[in-house]
Length: 67
Image (cartoon, rainbow, N blue to C red; front, side, top):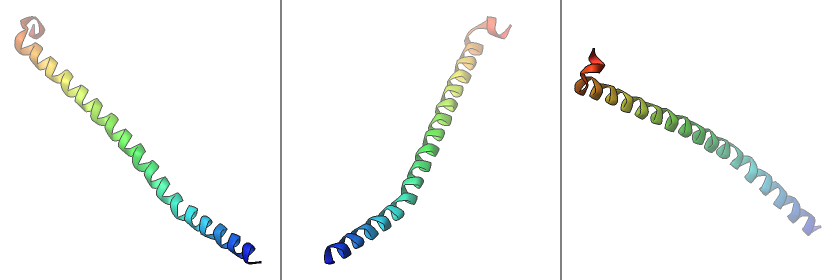
């Protein structure tokens, strides 16, 4: 009987632990996805800025671009 009670307590504790951790794991996954999206946006903006700088340099240094 005490073994059964100990097993029941262990199962309840395990269940409560899992139920406590699930929302945290979900939040972590959401944060990871948002971080990935923001990183991709940042990389796109950096590339766009580099393209603008390249165009500005071309206008400043190459007369055929202006014409």
